[in-house]
Image 1 (cartoon, rainbow, N blue to C red):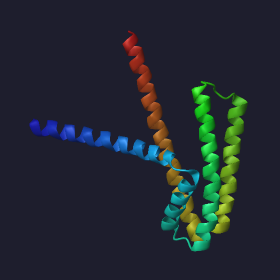
Image 2 (spheres, rainbow, N blue to C red):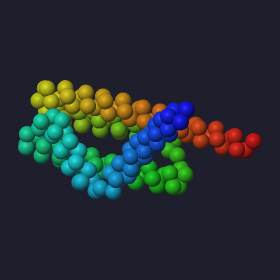
Image 3 (tube, one colour):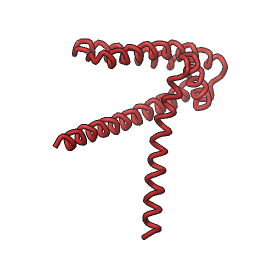
Image 4 (tube, rainbow, N blue to C red):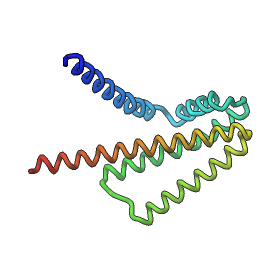
Length: 156
Protein backbone atom coordinates (compact mmCIF):
# COMPACT_ATOMS: atom_id res chain seq x y z
CA UNK A 1 0.00 0.00 0.00
CA UNK A 2 2.81 2.41 0.88
CA UNK A 3 4.53 1.51 -2.38
CA UNK A 4 1.36 2.32 -4.34
CA UNK A 5 0.92 5.67 -2.60
CA UNK A 6 4.54 6.66 -3.18
CA UNK A 7 4.26 5.67 -6.85
CA UNK A 8 1.09 7.73 -7.21
CA UNK A 9 2.70 10.74 -5.50
CA UNK A 10 5.76 10.47 -7.77
CA UNK A 11 3.58 10.30 -10.86
CA UNK A 12 1.57 13.36 -9.87
CA UNK A 13 4.76 15.27 -9.12
CA UNK A 14 6.27 14.41 -12.50
CA UNK A 15 3.13 15.43 -14.37
CA UNK A 16 2.98 18.72 -12.50
CA UNK A 17 6.60 19.58 -13.26
CA UNK A 18 6.22 18.54 -16.90
CA UNK A 19 3.30 20.92 -17.35
CA UNK A 20 5.09 23.78 -15.61
CA UNK A 21 8.24 23.41 -17.71
CA UNK A 22 6.27 23.89 -20.93
CA UNK A 23 4.71 27.08 -19.63
CA UNK A 24 8.08 28.34 -18.42
CA UNK A 25 9.61 27.69 -21.83
CA UNK A 26 6.93 29.83 -23.48
CA UNK A 27 7.49 32.63 -20.97
CA UNK A 28 11.22 32.56 -21.71
CA UNK A 29 10.56 32.77 -25.44
CA UNK A 30 8.45 35.89 -24.91
CA UNK A 31 11.41 37.62 -23.28
CA UNK A 32 13.44 37.35 -26.49
CA UNK A 33 13.42 39.99 -29.19
CA UNK A 34 11.92 39.06 -32.57
CA UNK A 35 15.45 38.88 -34.01
CA UNK A 36 16.56 36.45 -31.31
CA UNK A 37 13.48 34.28 -31.87
CA UNK A 38 14.19 34.27 -35.61
CA UNK A 39 17.81 33.23 -35.08
CA UNK A 40 16.82 30.38 -32.77
CA UNK A 41 14.12 29.19 -35.13
CA UNK A 42 16.51 29.30 -38.09
CA UNK A 43 19.16 27.31 -36.24
CA UNK A 44 16.61 24.67 -35.27
CA UNK A 45 15.57 24.41 -38.91
CA UNK A 46 19.21 24.22 -40.00
CA UNK A 47 19.73 21.26 -37.70
CA UNK A 48 16.56 19.48 -38.78
CA UNK A 49 16.87 20.16 -42.52
CA UNK A 50 20.67 20.28 -42.97
CA UNK A 51 20.60 23.74 -44.54
CA UNK A 52 23.57 25.33 -46.26
CA UNK A 53 24.68 28.91 -45.46
CA UNK A 54 22.75 30.62 -48.26
CA UNK A 55 19.57 28.76 -47.28
CA UNK A 56 20.09 29.75 -43.64
CA UNK A 57 20.48 33.41 -44.57
CA UNK A 58 17.34 33.40 -46.73
CA UNK A 59 15.29 31.63 -44.09
CA UNK A 60 16.63 33.93 -41.37
CA UNK A 61 15.29 36.94 -43.29
CA UNK A 62 11.87 35.27 -43.59
CA UNK A 63 11.85 34.29 -39.92
CA UNK A 64 12.77 37.83 -38.82
CA UNK A 65 9.91 39.27 -40.84
CA UNK A 66 7.49 36.74 -39.34
CA UNK A 67 8.75 37.28 -35.80
CA UNK A 68 8.18 41.03 -36.04
CA UNK A 69 4.66 40.48 -37.36
CA UNK A 70 3.95 37.91 -34.65
CA UNK A 71 5.12 40.34 -31.95
CA UNK A 72 2.82 43.07 -33.30
CA UNK A 73 -0.15 40.70 -33.33
CA UNK A 74 0.59 39.49 -29.81
CA UNK A 75 0.61 43.09 -28.57
CA UNK A 76 -2.67 43.76 -30.37
CA UNK A 77 -4.29 40.69 -28.80
CA UNK A 78 -2.97 41.63 -25.35
CA UNK A 79 -4.43 45.13 -25.65
CA UNK A 80 -7.76 43.69 -26.79
CA UNK A 81 -7.76 41.30 -23.84
CA UNK A 82 -6.93 44.09 -21.38
CA UNK A 83 -9.72 46.25 -22.79
CA UNK A 84 -12.00 43.21 -22.75
CA UNK A 85 -13.02 43.82 -26.35
CA UNK A 86 -13.75 41.02 -28.76
CA UNK A 87 -13.44 41.31 -32.53
CA UNK A 88 -16.59 41.21 -34.61
CA UNK A 89 -17.23 38.28 -36.93
CA UNK A 90 -16.02 40.34 -39.90
CA UNK A 91 -12.82 41.24 -38.06
CA UNK A 92 -12.24 37.59 -37.10
CA UNK A 93 -12.82 36.56 -40.73
CA UNK A 94 -10.32 39.16 -41.93
CA UNK A 95 -7.74 38.06 -39.34
CA UNK A 96 -8.13 34.39 -40.26
CA UNK A 97 -8.03 35.18 -43.98
CA UNK A 98 -4.87 37.25 -43.54
CA UNK A 99 -3.29 34.47 -41.49
CA UNK A 100 -4.01 31.87 -44.18
CA UNK A 101 -2.70 34.19 -46.91
CA UNK A 102 0.51 34.67 -44.92
CA UNK A 103 0.86 30.89 -44.54
CA UNK A 104 0.49 30.42 -48.29
CA UNK A 105 3.13 33.05 -49.01
CA UNK A 106 5.46 31.47 -46.43
CA UNK A 107 4.96 28.04 -47.97
CA UNK A 108 5.80 29.35 -51.45
CA UNK A 109 8.93 31.08 -50.13
CA UNK A 110 10.08 27.91 -48.38
CA UNK A 111 9.48 25.86 -51.53
CA UNK A 112 11.76 28.24 -53.46
CA UNK A 113 14.56 27.99 -50.88
CA UNK A 114 14.50 24.30 -49.96
CA UNK A 115 15.22 21.34 -52.20
CA UNK A 116 12.59 18.61 -52.59
CA UNK A 117 13.71 16.36 -49.75
CA UNK A 118 14.15 19.29 -47.35
CA UNK A 119 10.74 20.62 -48.33
CA UNK A 120 9.09 17.27 -47.59
CA UNK A 121 10.71 17.15 -44.15
CA UNK A 122 9.64 20.74 -43.51
CA UNK A 123 6.04 19.92 -44.46
CA UNK A 124 6.06 16.99 -42.02
CA UNK A 125 7.43 19.28 -39.32
CA UNK A 126 4.60 21.74 -39.99
CA UNK A 127 1.97 19.00 -39.72
CA UNK A 128 3.42 17.78 -36.43
CA UNK A 129 3.54 21.35 -35.16
CA UNK A 130 -0.12 21.91 -35.99
CA UNK A 131 -1.10 18.61 -34.35
CA UNK A 132 0.64 19.56 -31.12
CA UNK A 133 -0.92 23.03 -31.20
CA UNK A 134 -4.38 21.52 -31.62
CA UNK A 135 -3.85 19.11 -28.76
CA UNK A 136 -2.61 21.96 -26.54
CA UNK A 137 -5.68 24.02 -27.48
CA UNK A 138 -7.94 21.14 -26.52
CA UNK A 139 -6.20 20.83 -23.16
CA UNK A 140 -6.51 24.56 -22.52
CA UNK A 141 -10.20 24.50 -23.42
CA UNK A 142 -10.76 21.54 -21.14
CA UNK A 143 -8.99 23.35 -18.31
CA UNK A 144 -11.13 26.42 -18.94
CA UNK A 145 -14.31 24.35 -18.83
CA UNK A 146 -13.22 22.78 -15.57
CA UNK A 147 -12.64 26.22 -14.08
CA UNK A 148 -16.15 27.23 -15.07
CA UNK A 149 -17.55 24.12 -13.45
CA UNK A 150 -15.62 24.83 -10.27
CA UNK A 151 -17.05 28.35 -10.14
CA UNK A 152 -20.57 27.02 -10.57
CA UNK A 153 -19.96 24.45 -7.85
CA UNK A 154 -18.70 27.13 -5.46
CA UNK A 155 -21.80 29.25 -6.08
CA UNK A 156 -24.02 26.42 -4.92
